[in-house]
Image (cartoon, rainbow, N blue to C red; front, side, top):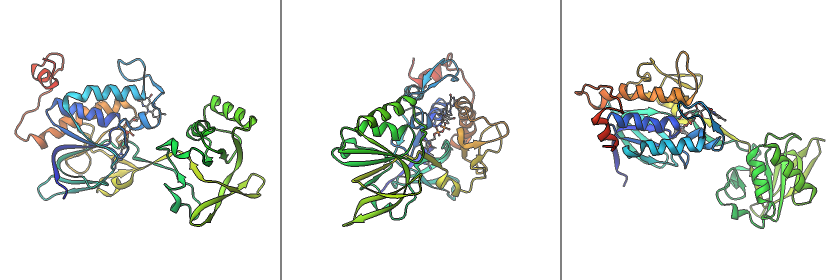
Length: 343
Ligand code: FAD
């Protein structure tokens, strides 16, 4: 039996803009639920550049993607948002009473008065290896993410890719695994030069091996993946026995189910009707951050923060139809001090 959660506001996406949306709603005394398909909050900042410095957050001269996320979490603490992670929002449907039914891939169900889509570039999915028959070994011998590195101890590994993830895992697992072969389709790498240098040094010391080529087929034995076929730059295909195949071809964002919610879409982005409320063509559904588009849109965190503030004011009448909503300063408003718990 699943119970349905009744909510005033549900935020789809826990990137920086979704997190700040919690704050702006909180100041207007609107409590929010936040859903993300990833297991952690922070969106692109955490998934793509946790350690890289950001220089254009107003009044924060420099902070990393992870630090920005940690600070946002601290800032929204007084509003006690409820997080629902590891689940994608799949269904959004308007109800006869004007509210929305919303459902996630884990079966969590909501009835909500308003929805804030802060889904960025969509939900991140690893790019997969396109070779016939490979899907059935996914999660068994073929992996696109490393959850538990100890799983690969004593195994013969082939690691595909030429970016930071492929290099980092090859360097990390060499020595722990029985053997590591890095397989990349060309000689140059997108990874940090220091990692590439380290990899080459380890190859020279026979601690791992680099092969230039592409996986073009697989060979199975007793229902197990036994070998891959690797076609080299010379056009020759060779067989390579292995225990596990790790593939790091990067993440590609997918708009996914959002495309099916009856919202107006322009080049994979949600069109907002005006820049006063950032509401979509469906009244009660707002779009903020990288996912939205309007004349002059810039995909910057600071733009998303501004949009979140105005969207909160735009949504308030759906939740408090009787109430006049005034803007107040956090510095001087006793009411906001109470809400923030700083009295
Ligand atoms: P995102 O950060 O993309 O977060 C969206 C979240 O929604 C994701 O976590 C995703 O999993 C989730 N989601 C999507 N669909 C669903 C669904 N159906 N159900 C559940 N969850 C879903 N901007 C700056 O202002 N300054 C910079 O210096 C800067 N540097 C950058 C450097 C790099 C390398 C990159 C890639 C971007 C940079 N950006 C920078 C851009 C900035 O990261 C984005 O503008 C920002 O992350 C947008 O935030 P967001 O919350 O709108 O979306």
